[in-house]
Length: 144
Image: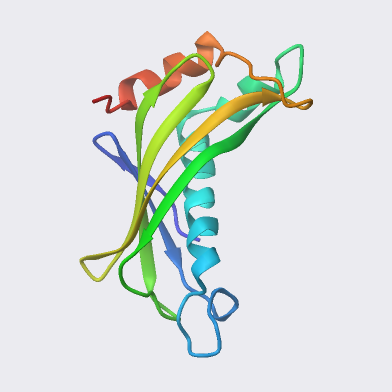
């Protein structure tokens, strides 16, 4: 995996496609695009500076869980490609984060999707996103 970076409000994470990411034909297996998107969201949080540790410091343990996911496959990626996962945080509500993600390679869009993640306790109850976490997201939100 290569280092991620922000370009404006878009977080970009390059990922090299390895043999383990592909099927027998050398094309990325469809479920692995979701893994690439998950890695990009995790690195996005890391790049914001301590989002995960801010959540770990809560009195009651919380975690991000996907509430909604939509994905569209347009073109395949292949072994040895370096794809770029673009992540844009679209909005925050009380307990939810909405983001759009796309995977690009060689100047074209391979996959695009949207996710809605919510903050929950380990028992599955929703929790508000803490103010210190909201503050870290605020400069990068691209609310519509």
